[in-house]
Length: 107
Figure 1 (cartoon, rainbow, N blue to C red):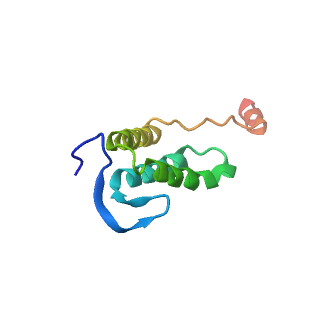
Figure 2 (figure 1 turned 45 degrees about the horizontal axis):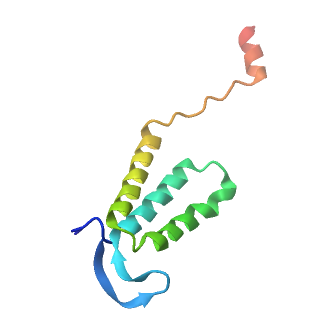
C-alpha cells in the first residue's frame, strides 16, 4: 500500500479533480482527519470552540492530501497515542466539597 514514505500514499486516482483536493484518493490524510476529530472532542475545554473541532481537521485534510506519507503517518500516530493517553492516563479533577457539607461533617 505505502511503497515510499517520501511520496503521498495514493490508493487510486479519481476520474475527475475535486477543488482544493485534487484527483488522488489518499487514505492517511483521511485517517489523520478522523483521529484529529476524536482527539479534539476528548480534549475540548471550551464549548465555544465546538466549530473548530470540525473545521481544523477538514482544513488539515486539504493541506496534507499531497504531503508525503511519512508526515501523514507521523501525525496520525501522534493523534492515536494522544487519544490513548487521554483515555487511560487522564485523571478527573477532584471537586472541592461544598461548605455546607464540610460543616455537617464537623458535627
